[in-house]
Image (cartoon, rainbow, N blue to C red; front, side, top):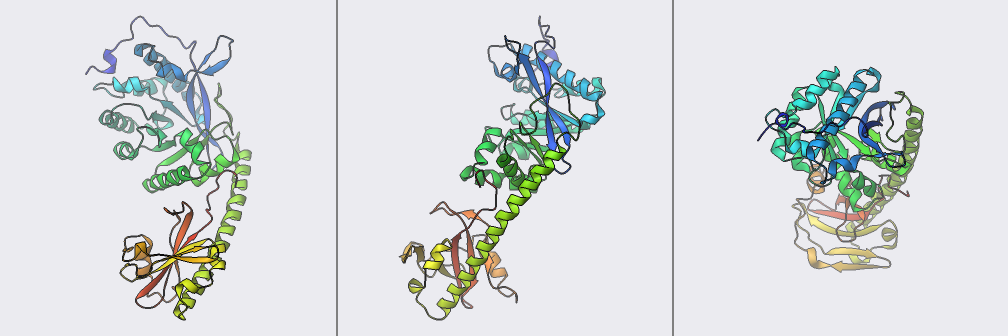
Length: 407
């Protein structure tokens, strides 16, 4: 395949007009300062109003050479501007999918040459690889080239389209930018929030920095913090601007937002802790009743139901279920024998329970929060030994400590 330098721009002489860059700030939460900017393409409509030019790069009717030429001019303009402003932090630029697909053996040389020509420190540049951009092995080559040149790489639109875990593993980016539509949907709670938060635990373990873009409300800000985002970007702070702002422009606002998050989070955690404490007391009381010989289907269940305890059952120390599920509803205990003989030793909480059995201080174990497949409620499993051979396991709905919209 020919290299990109072997595809000259024929008979096209685009100028910075009618396309020009604007810069949207990325706020770094630990400091509260603007850490950098995303460069975004802008143009003017027939009324002279400034509008996004993003559709330019996805318009199949426009020649690829023209889009590449405009893209390069925008990047060079941005690099030149930031080279002359050391106090602006980093600049992030998107790579056009058409450009990536046409790269040859010289890979990233056009962008690296632009950075060098501008005299810009490569460490101040972040290249965003969009979720539609290019075939994986080609992307691996370009990312390695950028990293060798000192440029950081971000995966844009993470969680949508092709930006899935296989690409993250293959490309080993420095930064993850959440897909804005997924982020906004997840900020409302429900299954999408569960999935996104699970994905974020992976990025945290891998050491990637996370950016939430499209942040417009306090609820979205709080959910972004719960996602572990280091950077926030969106209209809650500022739209894309023609020139960078003062570094500390949003520090008072960030301080206030974090203060509100902290108050809401601690209040919610307080309620969650109190609820968990009440559940633990109820589980220990239930264990004592069973030890005293009270029939499992004859225990006082009203208080258990009010606390959100959904069911309990008994296993042996190998994880095999010895009893039916005792399903708790208002005023009744119903027996569900379908799970008799099932083995639950593979569940994460069970080895933890067994490992803690000989600890003097051990009395009760609680699993991490998960969503119950039967009721679709967030819950935890609480475990306590009935005797040397039997374990009481209790599934209880719990309040979530993540700040979803409306809470």
